[in-house]
Amino acid sequence: MFNYIKKFSFNFNDFFIKSKKIKNKSFIVFFHGVEEKVIDPNTQSVQITFKNFKETINYLSSNFDILPFSDLIKIKNNGENINNKISITFDDGYKNNFEVAYPFLKKEKIPFLIYLTTNFISSKKRMPTFLLRLYFNYTKKKFFYSNFFKEEFDISTKKKKEKALHQYIHFLKNFEYTYIKFLLEDIDILLSASERKNLFEIFKSEEFLEWEDIKKMQDLCEFGSHTKDHFIFNEKNFNNAEEQLLNSKKIIDDHIGKCNHFALPNGNRNIFIENFLMKKKFPYESIATTQKKFISPRNELFVSRMGVDNIDSLNQLKYDLWNNA
Ligand SMILES: [Zn+2]
Image (cartoon, rainbow, N blue to C red; front, side, top):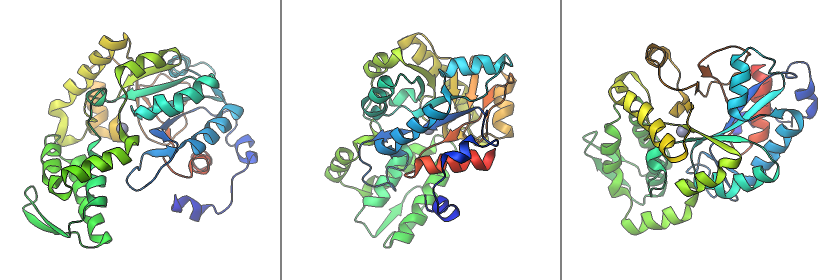
């Protein structure tokens, strides 16, 4: 947030979006979670407040036509006019998409799509990156020995904790998928069972949807896949990729009968991933990334999206629209 404030100490006004530069563009927006209150943005790093969400949606709906995701992809792929047309998506599948965002979107008749991480749906699981942040941010320990890294970590200051946390997140995102289990086992000693239970209660925002919630939202919401386990595609990790891509689709198909779109966890698009996804014919009509770009009326598998997971959501989005136009 602070970067954006530094860059733009003023508020954008409607002049910017109505100016030639942004007028008639088409884009896809993505959110993660929406909560009435965000207690600790550092730990709840993918949650935005309902106030910010409402403000952002109101702004978008008064300046653009919000289409169902599949419709936008269809007309885009046909090369038809997509000027001023946008779509709304959510990643991961948080419970608050149903409890907080959906009632508002339903009232406003705004269609949207949620990319589901299927192994987390109807489970008590939490996202591994959230667990790492939670354990490091709330531990009372000053030192701990890591069996994974075979070294003693000094976490006696905020700075040292952050450094250790980054090392864990780096391994989680850039190495074999099987490491996640060991990384999480490793930090288990940082919180007691009761501390963990209390914190899970406080940070209910990280709970996932249940299949029942998903079925209830089908009047307005489409569902895509975000893999089974928030699987991150990197060069070291292609062994399990096919299973993650295909089985997550099958699970969603089995529950609600339809799943034609996919979003890359972590949004990382690179040459290895592209080659992998293009080589085989995976049964998705689109693959969403987190590359901040507008979309064009062309038949392309990869679609870019503008992310909104910042406390200062609307200004961030306006900044990104302006900066990428
Ligand atoms: Zn995700």
